[in-house]
Length: 168
Image 1 (cartoon, rainbow, N blue to C red):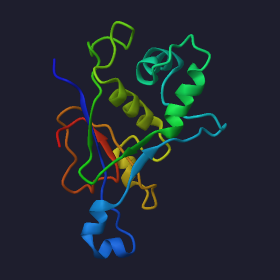
Image 2 (image 1 turned 30 degrees about the vertical axis):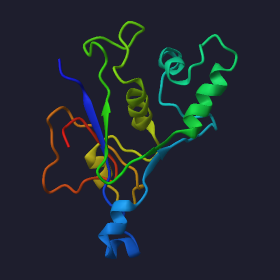
Image 3 (image 1 turned 120 degrees about the horizontal axis):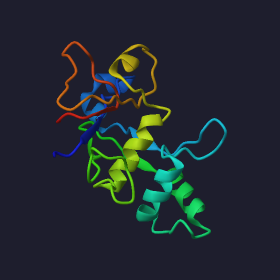
């Protein structure tokens, strides 16, 4: 079975001086970063079970350790993933994609999987190309998740940040 590959892409920034000089647009900084929920809690994008399963492998602190929650929160608050104009590639496959995530069915690339889950609820993201195109004043970071091999139509402008499951 082939891996589930997700690409996070963005379109160039087009305001002010940037719109007059395309080289500036290519260098512009779009980042996926730490955020808080409406209640002020650290946003993680993971369920409680996923956090307990995956985060010890990333932060190196066992769930039983009293500092686990503090270190897990710190990881998400410090999260900073630059999305260059060319995009970034994530492998979000599980060992067996036909089964749910579990201790015996972990993601092949845990950091990619955690970032993907984070982006699914990130405040600067949408879940479809239609959602992105529905509002001219959308936040700069956007993604959409498209089934394998699907491609946007040529008439649709690419979103600022696109999360999709097709090459390129």
